[in-house]
Length: 112
Length: 114
Image (tube, rainbow over all chains, first blue to last red; front, side, top):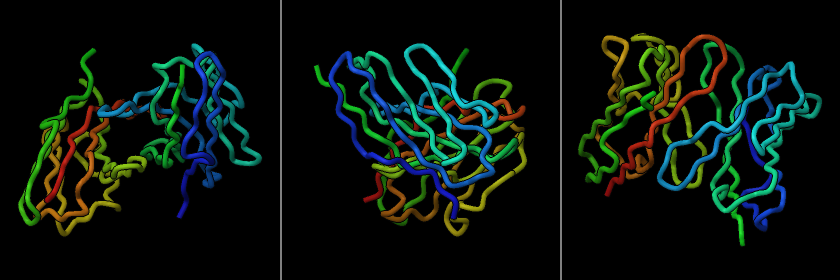
């Protein structure tokens, strides 16, 4: 069936560097995308979202890029900090009334 | 604003026993979700409620899992009888239900079936 997947299961970066986490999706009907951060023992926490009529959205230290042509989503974290260490999930929604469909996640490890 | 509340935080049961989880969504949120998250995987939707009606339960193992959302607020998820493969974190989430918006998650209940 349709799925949302991630290119890299783990990513290790040095503190202060920029991080890029990638995600591929296969459902061309998806029109809403979210990045979640999940720390150990906690539920997923919303980071940033983007709708299909946009290709870029910026938040505080984070940027999400959407390429609908190749069905690719990325999360960029600027000046990565130790507190950014977590598992990051992309999730997609194919329309109002539908539930979010999650990918497998990328573990981000920030080293001093 | 209070977040999504779940209880218990942890539960250990033997296989074939039954267990129930409780969720209190964010006040005013019409849509409530139960997700199952197996270790090392992303959350998988079990059931979605809109107010007190079921919108999607296509991935709920109905022979052993049941869920209800009486009065359109709190919800309970039950497993009876539990199997070893049910060991997972059960996450409750809620959203406003108006258009495409983010879902807010609780801390989850970690279930271990032995």
